[in-house]
Amino acid sequence: MKRKYEGVIVLKMQGQEEGLDEAVGGITKELESNGATMEQIERVGKKEFAHENHAKQNHGYFVQYHFEAEPSVIDGVQEKLKLNDSVMLQHYRRRR
Image (cartoon, rainbow, N blue to C red; front, side, top):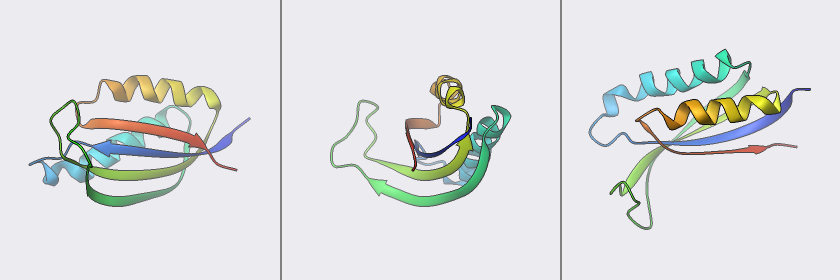
């Protein structure tokens, strides 16, 4: 049974802002190819971190995805996006 999810993905776009559309589109395609139905994509924008992270990044570009998918889709997408160099962080939660 499909459920509604919200995913927040932080992209490493330092010096690569021109590739933002391509990165957001690639993540959207990855979600859809795994069976997710996109409802909304919100580009929250560039945000500074309170502390420099392990990758020596002091900011990231936040994108919020609202979609509907089977629970098994989340695990598959997380594994694939771990291999994507432009994805710094990803977090998913089920919406009510």
